[in-house]
Amino acid sequence: MKQATILTSAIAGLALTLALPAAASMKMNSAAAGKMLAQSASRGAEMFAHDTFGGHRRMHGAAVTCDTCHMGGGRVAGRLPNGKQIPSLVNAAAIFPRYNPNLHKVVTLEMQIQHCVKGGLGGQPPAFGSKAMVDMIAYLHSIAKGQPTDAGGMPK
Image (cartoon, rainbow, N blue to C red; front, side, top):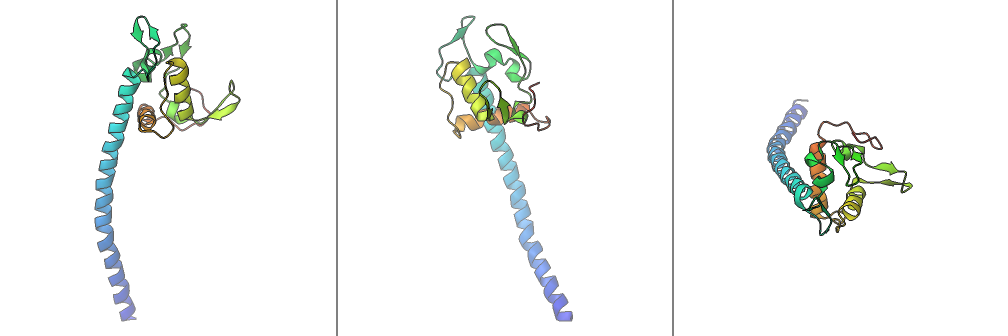
């Protein structure tokens, strides 16, 4: 019985010894991951504000970017070139995938970004899974912090 207790204690000690560096490593990896995610969101914000994705559309003499219609970085209600008001994007990352009645299918956030870039900007949308697409999605998630996940929900 005493040997079993010693063996159990030795195994528990070994597990703790192995777990401590792993926990420290996870903390370091978590910090590095947070930094990488913030950098990705920052690149996405830059694209959102400044990139035309090769589109040549102009509005009021300026090149059209995502921020042209989705004002304030998408954080406030926007306006289409025809004057129609559109919702903000503060919960966009939280409501996809969602059903699009005009297309008669479920669309993902990536599909919606591609649609907006191609149709709204007249540009070449970022490819699925590309660094540019990941950065745009990271940005939209960064402005959706705190929004409840509501797949299929309504834009705010």
